[in-house]
Image (tube, rainbow over all chains, first blue to last red; front, side):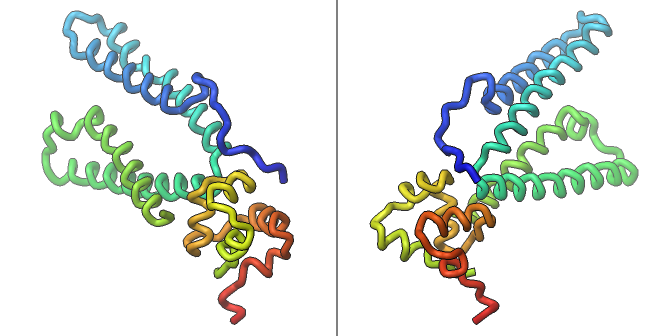
Amino acid sequence: MPAKSVATQTPLLARPMLWGATWFVAWLGARMVLESASVPTWGRVMAALAPAPIAGAALYTIIRGARELDELEQRIQLEALAFAFVLAVLLLMTLGLMELAITLNRDDWSYRHVWAMLPMLYFAGLALARRRYA
Amino acid sequence: MKNRLKVLRAERDWSQAELADRLAVSRQTINSIETGKYDPSLPLAIRIGRLFGHPVEEIFIDNSEE
């Protein structure tokens, strides 16, 4: 059972926060392109897909980083994700049912707004899990 | 599960951070174990036992056996 050092220097490109921030910037760029009326359809599709490879890189670094975490931090992350996953499923399911029940305003409840709630659920779960083990 | 980690650490006059460094875990992990909020994995419990020179069952006491 070799003990790994907790305080190791992580290379810049292996930092999940860097990729997360790059992903967010790519999303902002895609939104700007898509809100411009002069861009042709193929350009709009390319812009919509542009954040995906960056999200893939973010996912890769996050998974690699998770393997290096301390065991308590892994537990905290698991609880945060479990909390966020269940609430995300509940949110999407409820929105789907509400769509059948009433006419939802697409400016408020479209995918481009709802996805932003999912990271918030994760951070709420993270705060709860951290408080539990503090 | 109760444990004697805090007592054993105090006997050696180690801080939580120092013990965390020796076990290659975070200080929060040590704090959570000492306060009984978190039970360590078997590999970590064995490392703790080796570090203090005690069998794991002398450090971690299962409440259900009392």
